[in-house]
Image (cartoon, rainbow, N blue to C red; front, top):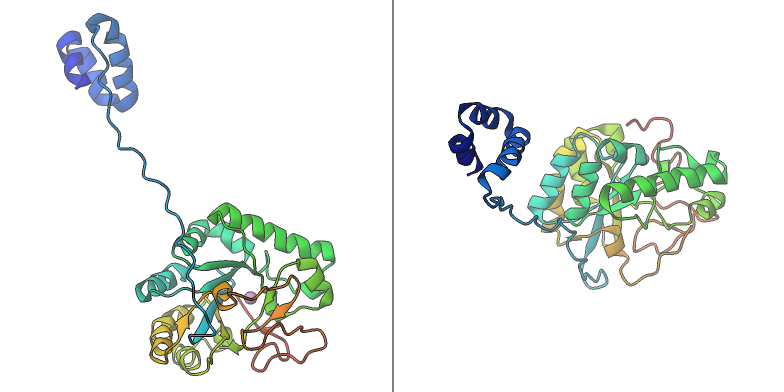
Length: 289
Ligand code: NI
């Protein structure tokens, strides 16, 4: 509307300015003419901004009553994680992501999307160092930097952490000050990089209360998840986040958990859970990312 006034009152010169320069020149032309025309400003009606999206409410799932399994994905977010989120969304299931702070810094939008789609975001340290080799201050730095990166990206502060390689001890437990979540089914996806194997293990091995370890930075892993989810559903599982898995139980800071069935098994003094951090957990020497 304003351009019409410009054309009528100011003639050709101003109409060129108004057409050529967008908002700025339009404002200039209109401002200059305000005194001449004396007409009230035409207010542009802008649609009121829609409220920012918020995470879905927590679900009330009792894993004593239904068969539960937690799929967990480590070391991301990475270039394949968006596709994994598409899969999980299409299937209507939730998972838990143990993320590296340095990767969250690279992909903050993906981390945010996880939260908005109901997944749990958790701490896997800043740069995947073996925490048992660090000072208490070094451990805390790895944790706290990641807490901040996740909070900045998603608005949510993780309540759970997973030590890289599953490597932990009493010293690490004290320094992290958060429940340490390991796993009860190790798919070894990082080693085999096999869609068929990832699918077979992920569908067949879990029992009620298990936590399954995958890595969303590997393409064959992400490729396998549609079939894994389908197979687990066919076996009657509800796919839950780790926090949902432990609903009703208080997880203690520093204590190590491997699955609901195992109940708070402290690594110190306890044998490692079968199929998981036996030997070099999560393979200290060979895990690549
Ligand atoms: Ni890892």
